[in-house]
Length: 492
Ligand code: AMP
Ligand code: MG
Image (cartoon, rainbow, N blue to C red; front, side, top):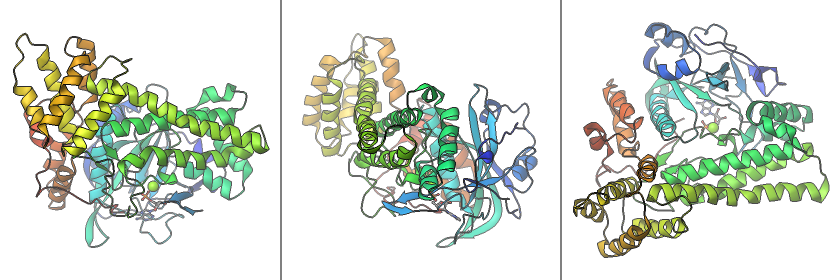
């Protein structure tokens, strides 16, 4: 079905180590992303039984050459010199319709040489969560790995309690992480490090090869992609939850969805992950953490860079500092879109800061606030604007007087109500629906009882996040107090 190539497998061991899937008892297809398969070059899609065999790892896909990737990583700030794919297998790369090389990887397919104490398996819950959240991110235009398939294994995996098992198939621009570079660097394997860096330049940043110092150009390019990525996360309230260096993609995609979640009531210090005890990866810390991760990346590149001594350290430091500027530039653009302002508006940042403070103080739901603001902007273009949409927005806050003052200052500068292009940008920056934690939990609970219909229903609406359908409206509603999910779990 897919035309596999195997460039990464030519890199020196143990960056890539051959490894085979361990068959499962009774693979059953839960979901398959046919549009993505076609994008990857599939001409026809086989029946569900064949897909279940392939995407559980029970039968090798024609042309695949499974292997596990080595990497290291800082986990919550502590360096671990060897992590690696303990439960994942790279099947190979395919060149997609647009000419881009992309990885296809099974996750939960059994033990590998990097499994340490783990069983190499995935429970069903995290598989469904990653499917929903990564496909939502893709629909929002936020760089992300994609979901190609989910297969139930018919086996149990034991975590705190026994849970149904599943295998997830992920498509990524690559699975190369900051931790991959740290792995080669800590082994003092300069040949492997250089081979890796050259592979990354050829694959993701070919323009860097023409730079005066290709490895410095590589660093700058990775910094730029991460800055855009983090700005986009922040614009939808996404909290990754485990921004370890091994979960930081060199291609600048969101990768390794674990205990991730979207913020509901706006709170910069928000944390969901049960394992993030020191709140290291709280919402507002994400830019600083990405920058910290990039500094670890820069350290690995120093031996390859042209300058030496203090000069090379200064160059790398300047590259990392530049992250702030790149992040602010992208954030300013996103703020203008979300607020329906002209792209060059000087008011984007102060107005957004004002609204964030309103959302925080007034306990407002972030997604509902921007959705209501979008409807209010639309209503302002009517000849006789009604109070309905203004009141709907004011109903979201516990401090309507303060929000009224903010709304007046916003209304004085917003242009979306008179400009259809600006309004379209505003609509596309403010989803009607996000995969809310209580909804994700609800579909996982139903799936554990054997009912996948709620999963498919939620997937259908979060992958059309600007659609105003009745289903979307129902599933978009914020959690009531009793529905709130306060903690999310890695579940690995
Ligand atoms: P993650 O939390 O998915 O980012 O994984 C962190 C590290 O733990 C990676 O090296 C994984 O391969 C490894 N790991 C996570 N779960 C398992 C498992 N069930 N079996 C083996 N290794 C695992
Ligand atoms: Mg990981």
